[in-house]
Length: 376
Image (cartoon, rainbow, N blue to C red; front, side, top):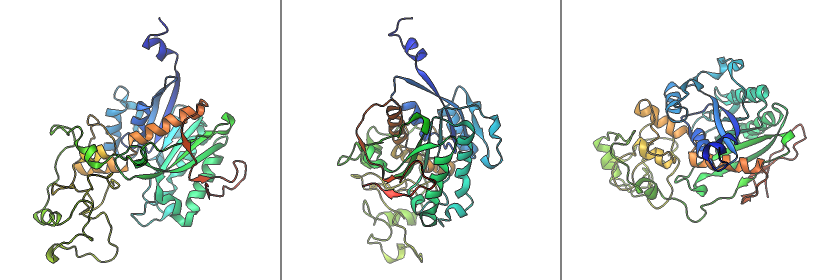
């Protein structure tokens, strides 16, 4: 074969076998597919999630030719010996107990300790690298002790890992949404590499909600484009809420105001500001939490939410409308995942690229206890 042919190039690429746990609908999976690299060929070996609709979405979009690689399972009852070896591992461990929207039980909750099953995978397979993801609220859970304990567990897993932890503001990387997530990247110590945090690419030129939703227009026949039925009172209330306002700071007539005691969440019946990135897309919530169009008196469709998460229109989600909403809201934006994967590959290859200091720096990679410090 000619060296310049595509088949020759693929044959000579190094295959990176990837496993995912808590894989979601495929945010990181799609980011892996999008990653621009001429040296590596990424191949999913397996992906695990608890929810069948989510698994079906992942199967059809990420592994359509090998759907058996996507496993619906509760990791608490799963036999890891049935899995094949991997070179890289990705896991967005459940955020329910770390999110600021909730009781914030942290490691004392039902879902908080599930990160340990990711640690078990690392202990078993000792991959060259891993990526762990969670919400920004993790840094404050259990008075900050949860984050430190998780970092210590990940650093000691397998044969030991060099960690880089950073709070990514994805709107600064071209995602049309204010979405802040903690990303922990571990590279096995014997490789003697630490990932550098990629420098933001969109400071001062963030992608607006209008740009994301209108360019190009969404086809009425696109998957997951069903409208939500709005009650007459919701439609009437939205008429008084201006772009960027919510149910609490808008000038709403008394009979349309919400009779809610306690905390007043700023995202309740909040309209998008068309000239700014959207506010954070969530996966659940009651009335008023569905994200609202800046001009039309309605909630966004799931397809519009997916665009704000940077999923392409041909990425179809499976399940009921509420199930799809949950999948979209819990996912990592594929564009953000792509940027992180590309930075990891460049770091492993000792290739320079624009970078910044991570938010946190460890006191030492060789101490028994990581002391979290803000990088200066």
